[in-house]
Length: 102
Image (cartoon, rainbow, N blue to C red):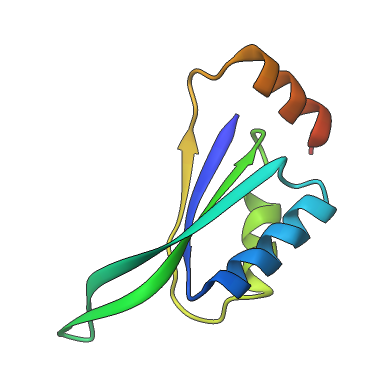
C-alpha cells in the first residue's frame, strides 16, 4: 500500500483531483484538510493557505496520480509517496479490491 501527501491551493482543487482519482480507480480513498504553510519562495518568506490531500492507493500508481494532479495544478506543489508498512488487513483487502493492479 502507498499513501501520497500532496499540497494544493484550495479545497475545490483537492475535491476535483480526488474525484478523478476515484472515478479512474487510481485510489481507494482520499482525505483533504486546510492548513497554513510558511515557506521560502524566490528569496522571500511567504505564508499561504493550502490544502493537504492524502491519497490511499496500492503500489505502482505514482505515474497515474501525478498525471491526474497535473491536469488540475499548474504551479509548484508537493507530492510525496509514502510507503505504508503496516495497515489493518480488512482495510488493505478493501483497497486492493477497489484499485486494480496497474
